[in-house]
Length: 109
Length: 113
Image 1 (cartoon, rainbow over the protein chains, first blue to last red):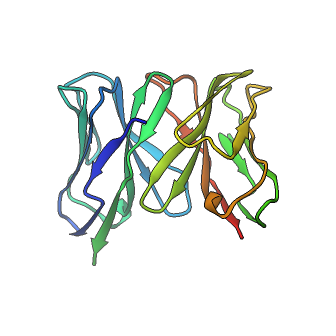
Image 2: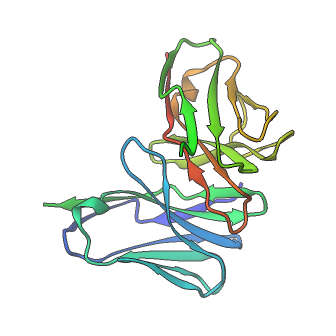
């Protein structure tokens, strides 16, 4: 099946630092999505990207849909404690939505 | 404003037992899907449905059955539970696939002994 390669698997950062994570695929996706999952809850959509090259922001979060349609990245600026969680990329391909394995973000006190 | 409701939240089964995980949405969404989440594996698609009466397999369908008799409900059935099915299960729904936000339930944590 289709796979999304998400990196890094985990990150340990200091509060206030910027964060960058990315997602790549060997296949083309028509839509890229970024979700966040808090402990004990389901994923919640952060940003949706619909066109190659699109750059979209949501507060301190910025995501881009790669020109080749095979990759996307998510940046978080000036991290705060509530940013802790697992971030997933996901892509639409026909009727299926495929998820990456996630990036677990830890913020050091 | 219930959104996507999953029941039960927790379940323990013995190997070989059967059970149904319930999923209901009140947003009149056509598209519904089931995922399982295992440590280090992300979310893997089990089955999905693009509308009432239509279901299809995802990445990991073996051991699971689904049906979609109404727009609102999309139950996931385990006919003979196995320890490998110990996982957290999430149901999600959206108006469609392309250009539509998918909403997730809070999950069902299943342990098979």
